[in-house]
Image (cartoon, rainbow, N blue to C red; front, side, top):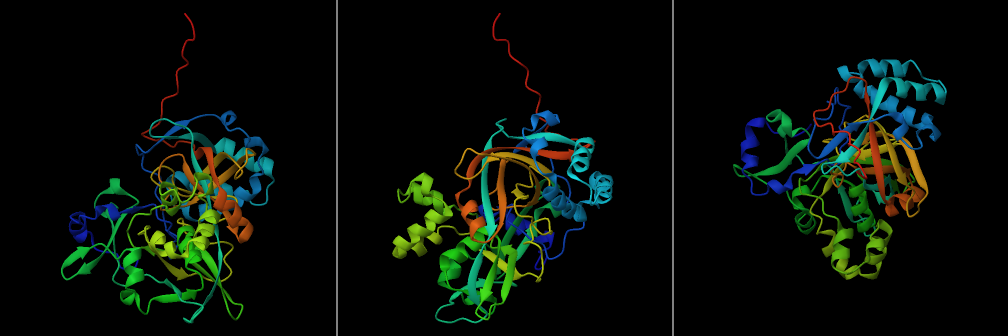
Length: 405
């Protein structure tokens, strides 16, 4: 990646008092698909308990085909790993087969592992995200005055796994100030003094709140005045931790919990324009973008492959390996209607931390945004791992307790 800092500078960054600026699981789309994404290192943040297929309620009712296409995209990356190589070769040979054959493939070649939180809880939070459409221009004007920036040259990125393998998926970000490495500018600092980013403007859009949520989603499309639509995706992040402004509004008594959705926050901003900038700047995290090639079937996720609407999932890579199939049992937004389907872990997110924690990709446009914005459901997850997978943090099978003497 551009501007990678030599591991010799790691010591400098580790001495920063701002070590809390470490961003884990930021939504990332590498410029080129990684040649090899290593399987998840067992971590105490999550436990994986092997189970049988009968435990996956709704497994036999799900339409496998949309998830199959997403899994084949994962295999474009996973096929270089010993654990996945044989499985992906076999999957490629089954292109065009019906759902029954594909379901048998999963049942014969995979073992479902229920994902548990570190405390053993099997339930977690499932939220949603989507690819929004913004109005914009390649030039600043009175209407289009909010910039999307490309990654600045001075942003330094340290991959800690180069020195400490156990810190895989952890990066530190900063900038040089003289001979010292200091944290990169926060959102507030960037907006109050944009001079350091002058010349890095990729596009200009007409709405500050839409731009803020574009940074949270990680990718989107911008329609220019001439009708051209430009797809943009995550390039980098400033290293500051993500902070939920919805939770902050609830804590301040500005919104009830049930209204702290994307739609609710936007409505609050329209009612309180004088308070809006201060609120947005409470989230110090700031995302930089890059223009993506035209014609992609979907935005690029952290795995480096296009996401599939309704079948791609953002997860914590410390708990679930990127590219793996995941069976999700949750409910449709704001309902009790079951939503049980096979997904594929192909993305990450700054707010997606922990074992049973995921972001459901709904796709592009307003309808997808409506679903994503109100999705805050409880759910369970099973990651499907190839036969022979061994996890050092396998949870013990519960022992039935006697109910009487």
